[in-house]
Length: 356
Image (cartoon, rainbow, N blue to C red; front, top):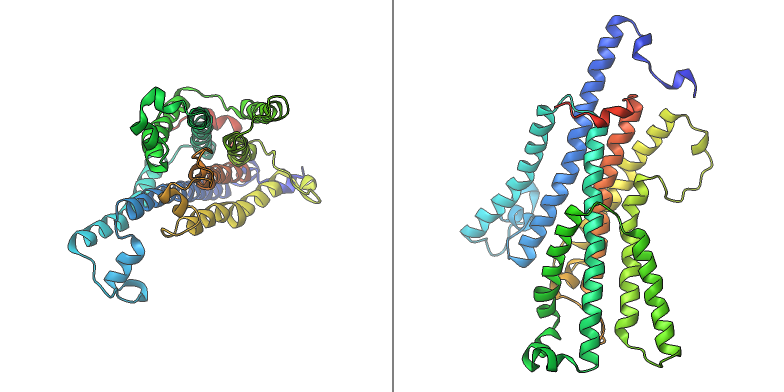
């Protein structure tokens, strides 16, 4: 690494050192506010998405049109008073999220960038852990239910009425999948391991089971292939954020390996701002903008495969895209903090101390 690539405060005159430190602190605050604001606004967007399409709240586009803001055309039918109140709450939720972030950063102004990067990285890891437990538990539960239905064992076990009900996508989602999702969230909170290896092994095992049952026992059902696709899609989408943490993504390296540490940090910072974060935002924006969007529509209708005896998880597989985007946005925010810390030569051991 060339000495010209790094600014060493100790080599600067006294006034220059003060200016350097002051500038570094200002950048520290601004970058932390930006990174946490991105995550906070994203979470508010997801909450409002649920309120818009599942609880019939107006949403910001309708609220802005009703108010005549930003040059939008007024609604042909004005919103009711209660809808206007809900619209204000949704609008203020975004502002409130940013205000809370600013207050948090100002209250912890001495906290290092690496500490916050580690905090966001742990949050991303929790999302991925929860997602893995969700696909594992729901996959096993659904394949058992589908097997019992195919072989007509279900009526003898739970009765005709409940057997018919569990064959309806909405009923199974609400009374089977949702409780299992909550269970998975709890398990992921206490279990700190990431099951990439185990999930890969289960994908191979499920595929091997299909081969054995087809060619040895001449038995094959749609749910068997559905399970492989369900786990296989999760394995690749959910592992992206984890791979980003360990710098394991494939890159075509022509110049990067020759860069100094500072130039690598600049490259990664610009790449995060221009490519990484916008990618996650575009996926969420395009996929969840309205009820007919590519992510919202299957989730809202609890979409399933065409086979009545397959797994009822197609809507969850579409939700994988949202989980992927969320985990990548959180992890890229962490990555941004880490690389700006590299630019300012923040010590590695600063992440170990919580200087609040």
